Image (cartoon, rainbow, N blue to C red; front, side, top):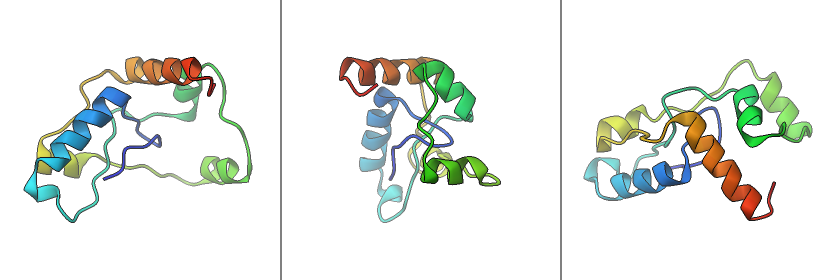
Length: 105
């Protein structure tokens, strides 16, 4: 299972709950599951909540120029009954605050 920022983002609290749900469900064993929010996260939404635009390097430029990409938490919802409980913007703001407090932003 992956819990990472991307096209859809799960906050720390939701990520922990997703890991617990996946770990306690036999249907998730041996399969890849993504934990993310049902609402898509655009680069603009992410920048608004974090307070700055992502660094632009070769890898980020390739991401921005891709015709489209996303991850879906539908399999985790189906197999373990998990879905994000924290509203998207609240989770992004919480994550940005934690990164700022740690000196990473």
